[in-house]
Length: 355
Image 1 (spheres, rainbow, N blue to C red):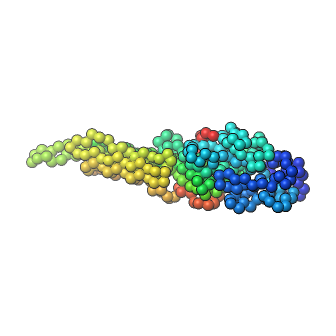
Image 2: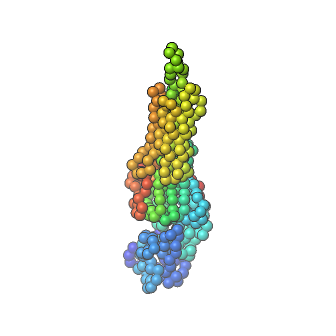
Image 3: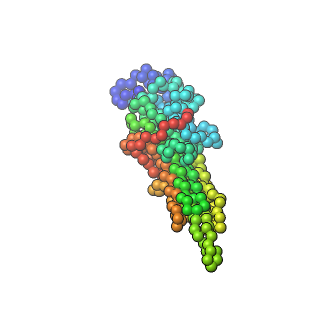
């Protein structure tokens, strides 16, 4: 548990919280994922303000309210992208120096995190589930997991950290004739916060972005066209494919079927990048064009619908995911760079994620 906030502190209480050392040995500073950590501190950065000083005089009163810091490591091996991670699963499966780090390394992994501080440090790219994977738009790239009561939980995203929801695929263009376009797939979400016991704080020096929905496919078209004074031809065209929504993994553009007769086939929708949605493909003659993937901002809600033809409807755009999904009734405190995408509260993220 955190040490007392006033009065007498015993050396044995300091030892039990942080591990055995001389008092001066608790004067330390370590760096993880671009953030500096003292033995216990709430403000992490190039010049961390620590309750326990990193140099100079150290005294017992410096340990008021101090608590053990455990780092969940999503910052090592920055060239290796990861997908659908769960910080609590990683904590349970890890030991100090392998998956997690205990600041100071003077004591082993605690049996319980109650009264202690857990900091999830991200300085690499973490992607979510693909929009078409069947999890819905509440699947998240990074789940905090649910922690012991009275855990102080923080998420810190370094300058090279990228947490993306997955992009939704574009809808398929309508088949030749008066056939509706297919719906775009949903985007998925970036951070899922399952823990509700205390407020969660997020420091964002990188990028936290929702996944965006794919555009709907354009409608196909079938129509009689004059082929002479008293004759006509039944002409069919296919709809354009929907554009993919931005995210990681990227979405795929929707295809436009072949099979036009006396008309033309539409064009496929365009794929996305992690930060830009794809445009929809043009429809064949008199057929509908595919809708674009959702606009990448914090107010859009879905990809664009595919265009109707005179004989059928375009497909609907897929819903966006969220930058942050939290089961708490209020959102987390976010400092640093603003998140890209919507934040939803009082909503439980889809369970899952590996270590």
